[in-house]
Structures are given as structure tokens and as C-alpha cells.
Image (cartoon, rainbow, N blue to C red; front, side, top):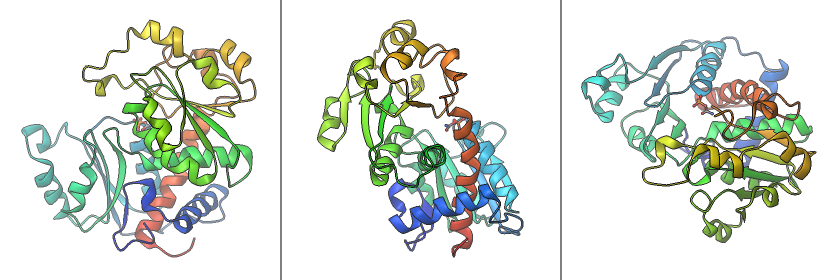
Length: 308
Ligand code: CP
């Protein structure tokens, strides 16, 4: 983003190494209070355009923009002319006519952010497109690990991503980001969710949960994305939980020192048990907390550029 002519954060790889370091530095400065948010986006206009449901991402982008002093408008299909059949392009053109500085955009189709980018002069932030990318989620996941481990680089860290990798935009963005920070990534799940071909891209693959957890430092559980399955058969959720659900016993036995993450929303009793959710090793709440600082930093860099 800071290094391209176009102001965008659509893929993790829109960030150069320098821009990535700057974003984390800025997010930390907001977290510690070293950088004061008040007024940095005064007079700016942020539109949250969400075609898919969201709690964490939409709330934290809204809070982040407001803390920076921006005006925020939320647009969802319900209650707008999208529900009357207005196309994506016409919707964006209508929003564009109101002069937004940033459009934060979530859509069910992979590649949709590039479509709206052609229709607006605003900076575009991808808040999740289909199964392709969710860059601010990966950034907040990385910041959570940096903060937990008290180090910027994640060299030597083994992160096991468990579950529905193939449909997960969170997995895709983390697969782009974590290796850049020095971490190794192991993909764990049934063959319908974790293709052996991922090995050719440099990732470890395991189809057995206990084997996949062994020796890892972080277990990142992924939501089973039922809404994206379209004919994929993975059996019942009960059977899935029996084979791939994270229980305290499994965690204690296979990776007792590992931190547990989940981007949310969690299907309790499917990806992991209530007991794991409430375990001190579980970083889910910390992930949500870091989301706001990462999103403040992203908005601030896209709109105002320069140093924190
Ligand atoms: N992690 C995530 O994107 O959550 P929401 O769908 O609630 O925004």
C-alpha cells in the first residue's frame, strides 16, 4: 500500500516489507498510546461496504475509523438498493458519487475488490473476498503472536493451521504472511480440505490431527465454511469433531506448550470445545483486541501516509 501508486490493501502482498514493518510499528504505537488517534482522519469519510455478514471485522473497522476521527457509513445488502437488485458496479458508483476516502469491502466472490477498485478513487481495503484473502485478519493474527511472544520476527515458529484450509481466506492470507515473518506453516485436515498439492507450495501437510499438532508452537483452528462448500462432502459435523476437533486432552497430549488461535466466528463443539476456548492458552480475545489497532494502522497509512 505505501509503496504502490494505488492506495490499496487487497492482498497481504500489496505490502512491501518496509510497509509491513511500518504497519506493525504504527499498530503498536496506537496500542501503547505512543501515537494518539484523535483527529488523524478528521474530515475523512470511510464506507464499510459489506455484502457478507461480519461481527469482528466490521465492528473493529468502524471503531478504528471513528477513533481516528473519520465519518463512517455502513452499507449492507439489507436495507439498501442492493436488496432491490442493484449491481455491485452501480452500488459502488453511487457510493463513489458521495466522495469516500476509503472503502472497506467484504464480498462472497474472490476478486471482487479489484472490480470495485476500477470504479472508485478511494483507497480500497479488502475485509474478506470469497476464499481468496482477508489481509487484516492475517495482520492481526501476526500482531497477536508478536505481542504474545514479545518479538517482531516469528523465525522458527511452527504454526499448524487446522481445518477447512481450502475454503479459508484467513488461511490464504496467513499462508502469504507467516512465511514472510519467518514462521513455518503446516496444513492439517482431511483431504477434502487440505490438498496434498500444498506441499508443492512449500507447506507441510498432515491429514491426521495428532500428527499435525506434534511439535507445533501455535494451533490456528479454522472455521468449517459450510457456506462455501458447494458439493464438498466432509461427513457430519460430529464425525469432523471426532477426527479434527481440538479438545483439551488432545492439546495437552500433542502440543501442551502451543498457543491456540481461531479467527472467529467459532462453531463451538465443532472446531474446538468450550474448554479450549476458555483455556489460558487460547488467544481468541487477544486476536480481537489487536484487530482494532491493526485496522487503525491500515486506515491511517492509506489515508495519511507518512510516519506514525
Ligand atoms: N474473523 C472474521 O472475519 O470475523 P467476522 O466474520 O465476524 O468479521
